[in-house]
Image (tube, rainbow, N blue to C red; front, side, top):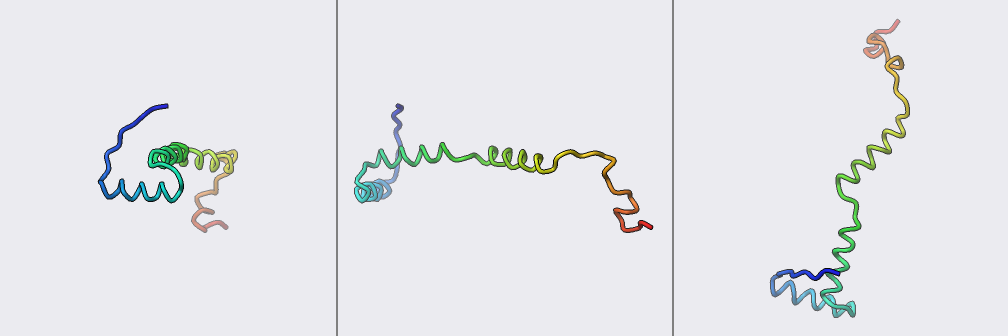
Length: 78
């Protein structure tokens, strides 16, 4: 378990103490819970990587021979 020191404005600390009292806990416990939730969240980069993997899995295989001809792509096919 690590101890940290955080500096906050007096009004922020007062309001945090009120919130902690309403929840029958301490400011320290509120901060610890917030940091645990923050650390558990998926980062932006992790989310993008997960979405990329899912998209690649949906695409399946790709072969150059599966492409449309230039004429068909431009609506000029016979």
